[in-house]
Length: 132
Length: 243
Image (cartoon, rainbow over all chains, first blue to last red; front, side):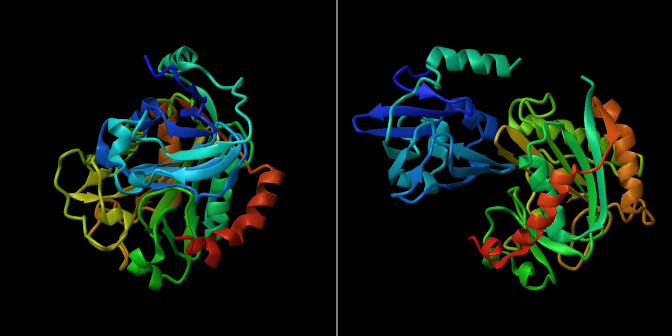
């Protein structure tokens, strides 16, 4: 069971409310799609500068694995206040702990309306269908 | 699985236009899977999406440089057949891990190359002689998923996944150039082979090997208009030096 303290997008990002800000990352499913468990397959992650304003679903960054570049899309609107400085140098963190140490950005959200996002059980239902 | 793919061909096309067409196939709004074969006139070097210009010495020697939307290393687009596959991410060919999609496509191409006498296979743990450090060139850096023959990498490939779709680029080498020495090509197996003939062989084999029905088509007028207006972007200093 994936963490139920956060919401999920169809494009495999998660968002976790933390007071007036929210942490955003990608799920274990997304990481595995990119690298199939091979930590070394993740080669680069481009994250935004603090201060950048994001709309819902706007691409805030890109992640490169050995054979693919994928977009990172924001589940909420808001302003980037912090990026995870560890990630760009230690992408293997995403394989080991995508839920806590592997967060990507922290945003000050303008609304925490997450009606269009999925909870953990809905997300698991979606990926179970993707795998068939 | 048998589904319908649009087949496009743009031989001897301008380098920026080639990249702009693939951008439209990825982001232009069409939901139809598309297989596109193309070649470049004049020859050009393409940088991977994240590559820094300074990390690719050959960029200083190439007469024309573009940047791709796909990742990976730089490619000298000369003496090759280039292809792109563009499809929804939930298409059976691309559903699931990235690695598995490469395996499906590369195994199909290996079957076609066998007809020319090239014993192509996924590199896996095999040792290749084409890896060269510090060039920044795609063909000088192999992974276990790459297609190799004659102990060298002969197919360069990369994907971009965005907005629910995937763009899969591939470059199949018919010969080598001074910017990509020591790599595998079909030159020793089929010295007279032209890109158009290889494209015909692939399009004849893919329906059975990949379960696709191909229908020859054209770019929609809106796709063509946008591709033409975006061609210069992929050769612009701003985009080339984005990193």
